[in-house]
Image (tube, rainbow, N blue to C red; front, side):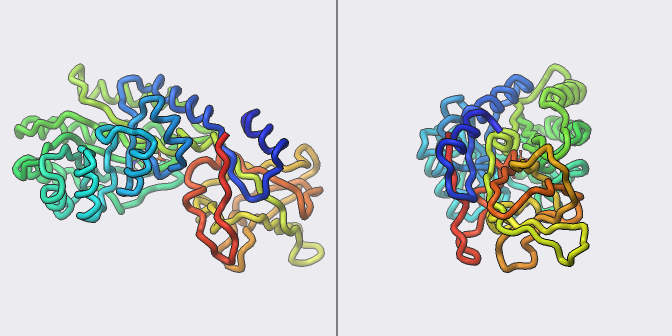
Amino acid sequence: MTPKIARFLADRQPATPCLVLDVDRVEENFRALAAALPLAQIYYAVKANPAAPVLERLVQLDSRFDAASFEEIEFCLAVGARADAISFGNTIKKGSAISAAHAAGVSMFAFDSAEELEKLAVHAPGARVYCRILVENAGADWPLSRKFGTTIETAKDLMIRAGEMGLDPFGLSFHVGSQQTSTASYEAAIGRVGMLFTDLKEAGVNVRMVNLGGGFPVRYSSEVPEIDQFGDAIMTAMTRHFGNALPEMVIEPGRFVVGDAGVVQAEVVLVTRKSKDDPIRWVYLDIGRFGGLAETEGEAIKYRITTPHDGGQTGPVAIAGPTCDGADIMYEKSNYRMPLALACGDRVELLATGAYVTTYASQRFNGFAPLAEYYV
Ligand SMILES: *Cc1c(COP(=O)(O)O)cnc(C)c1O
């Protein structure tokens, strides 16, 4: 937790649950990433946290933006981002959204199928397009599965076709999975893209860009490699596969930019045991899976939780949310422990909750209001 967030929570005592996010930390993270990969253009993945104060600070820093929908493009334009600094990175878009983005001046679009490429040719004629290839997501705590990307062979055909359809076959992309804790996954993906890139050049395609996606990790319950280690591994692999003819490099970080800039404060609603001598206490908070902690699905993302009793004796707990839904359990199998002194009414903090929390909150499930947000 940054000093600014601690001061805000102490002075304002906001109603819980709430997210407090330090925008200066967003700037520090952006600068650290730019320093680790100085040759890459940074397109912030807006979906990680689309709040205006975050986007405004990133516009000041000359960030570019990766948008998942036309609505996110509008968020960026509303805070002064230039349309030509926005990439429409979702491979699944309505024709109407492509047309609207194209009319607004967005000129870079992702695709991973022949069907989507045809939509782009119709609704964004002449645009720069890049093809997403399927890569291994091993090592990622929040994998993006097989939903996105295509095979190398199909990507080759589609890039050739893009040119024939009057589009600009600008580049290739991949995403190694979110909260990727292994630098090797980037190296392997760069190797695959490198071979395809060379192949396409030889086939006469004017391909010039490699988009390395996001995935850069945040420290939750376990340590993760430093961002400089990712930078070094990526540059070494790029040089190995492209020599000194490096293509334009793009990265699309989301989680890394905003994750550790935010803290959720929540209240303990109930602490109990299923039977008198059950060693496990059940701790129910006023935030849960439906209040924004969707990434606790499968206990994938393990947030660090601080309490007013830290340092005291602890015991094993299961941690759940406040709704009447059996799926609203955050942690039952991950061996969480909390202080024995923890009691109803205590305020606890879930650290590094700046990414993929506010927008995952349901609207009014069980009547609870969506998560309150403060940007300081
Ligand atoms: C979600 C997403 C990102 C951001 O991923 P992080 O793991 O948050 O860095 C980047 N690019 C695309 C295409 C995405 O879908």
